[in-house]
Amino acid sequence: MNNVSLLGRLTADPELRHTPSGAATTRFSIAVDRRVKAGDEKQADFINIVAWNQRAEMICKYFSKGQRIAITGSIRTGSYTDRDGNKRYTFEVWADNVDFCESKGGSSSYDGGSSYSNNYNRQTPSRQEQSAPASYSSGDDGDFVDMPTDDDLPF
Image (cartoon, rainbow, N blue to C red; front, side):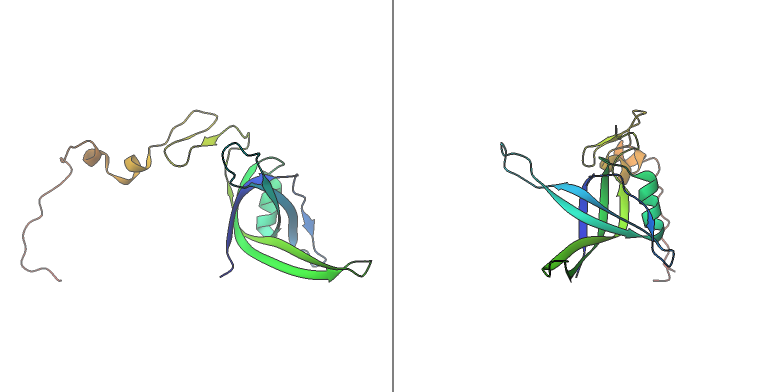
């Protein structure tokens, strides 16, 4: 299975281009932080990304240099011979899905699931609050109704 998920920052503003047949495309790179030991200097990998058609148009319209982006896609490899006769290898990720990781202003923060805040300081409920009904999570069982016993159930 060829599936990759990346979270990183754009290294430059993406540019929209079109193939001779008119298909929209963009190529850009993102810096993806590596996990390092405490006290070690931060390291990043720079991954080349390719997007096509409406996805390429959306990326070029809504993303810019330094902005965080989440990408899922597949790895594509290739090779070619350069002008000097040397064989070169290519490695890039073709984007299947792209997600926003912060507001356009870049001032939002996401702490991993318990709350999300943006420029308006809006807070969403925690995962526990989202998954349980309000009456149940508060200990009130007033929303529950006794089911009549019926011996004529279809199952």
